[in-house]
Length: 405
Image (cartoon, rainbow, N blue to C red):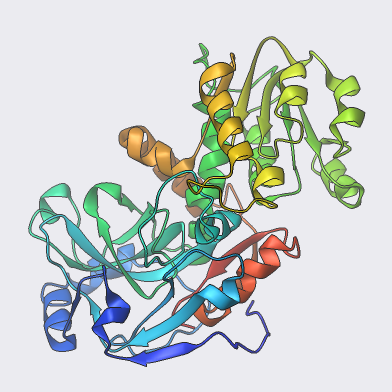
């Protein structure tokens, strides 16, 4: 679904090299000769092609991307949509040029744009945490890693996804399945991977990988990750699933076999105190005190975010606001029976485990065993407006950018 707002964010066209600073630009003719010089046979390309459900723009020579050169609170003021007739250049042996089919637009992108993300990012910056696309160019070391021209791939890149072309390291790539909707595939990378690894990788290893007999509480059960947690926990045989959410979502949660709880921790904690085996919290309503109190003696808390703090935060002296920095430090170093999770950090610190789990979830998607719901499908021009809608709480599902629309 395309956002209907008429864009007012400036779209800049041309061949100004300053607009592509840090991307590695080269001429169109050189780029295309390098990118398509060794395309594989038609049968191979078809096998790996990610299916799309909307028609795409046919001009492969125009690179278009969202960019901000400084951090800012208002996306429509600091973000620009840029179009140039040059595509990124392969300058290193490890580089892979991706023609992007789909990328996500999420609150994480908003936090990065505002300068309050816990990891440093370089400016100018293109948002877009997750990418699904096709290899159209690569350095000399990439083929030895098992990739080839025309292969469909996925990556959790943290930045750079909201573009038509992007450069990634081949080590960050995971093969993506054929015959799937690229927008649904993009939902898997951060949203479903966060849910899956929070359920199966963050807590201490159990003798069996199922969740049979396990009681689970997820805060914000109506959000994208909360819904993914519920879907995957049911698949793994969880005994009982509890989810906090606004009252208007309780009927939906009931229909999914979930016990809905109020959003206010003062109301839900007495109902589950000391009973939970796993608590997944991405809100940080009271410094994680209530989620910890909900655990039983062997329970484990997995922290996947702190939206209540981040949504109202402004940059601190060193970027990250003081209260979020303190909460981040406490959850990582001072709290027992607690794990802190970030999908990008997981992909960088445990790449083999990450790729194994991502390929497993892609296999479930290809077989129709999991069904991500895409709330909106938008163009690059709509990305700045979508940032503002996400921050205002006007969108409660997964938004995917289709850069060739």
